[in-house]
Image 1: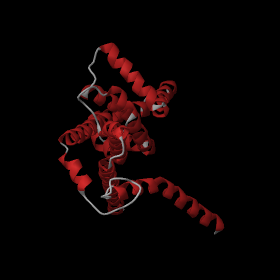
Image 2: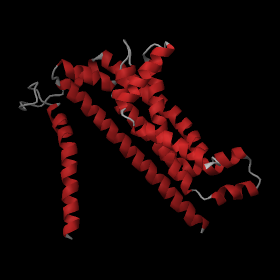
Image 3: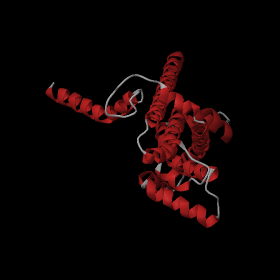
Length: 268
């Protein structure tokens, strides 16, 4: 019992350290005093300021377009990569691809961002929408691969063998056996890629050009100019949107799990 209590206390302390600054930021986004040192009254003025800023709304649109496009493309490429790693016959090639994939996961964002900057400069690609999109696709692919591979490894080879014995083509095996089975992993990879793209700053900072920006870079540039509670309001909106994404992902996973249980009960 004591060990369990110590564990609960530890988790509570960790969550307080993680979320207390966020709630502090959210609380002062409603402060009419204009500072974060004394709450003088409730106001929604900073939220109105955010929604009336046309440039900021365009940046928000840019951010979501980049996140959605990069997530969809990275998910498609990541699924293909995970399938290639899973069904690669030679262990050396499989381990090599896994190692290269994992290296990109653990590499510092600053190094990845600087590498992309040099790469685009050498090729003569203008920094802007394309450079940011390509960069986000690149660092999202390893995340999708890591989400999909466990589901592929859980899948029994007898499912594929049975489908082939029944005369299924390669496409039918992929579309009607493999993809439905790994769908939860694909969905998890998509949402992880989406959240990483929305939150990324270090890589994006290196590859954005004049006239194009994302929310993370914009918030950083505004914070350097001085304390403004409109930053608090904007950060609060982003945080709430992220929570909605997590809740949506939870309910989708729960619904898929219930479907799997029902289908299993029906077969029995």
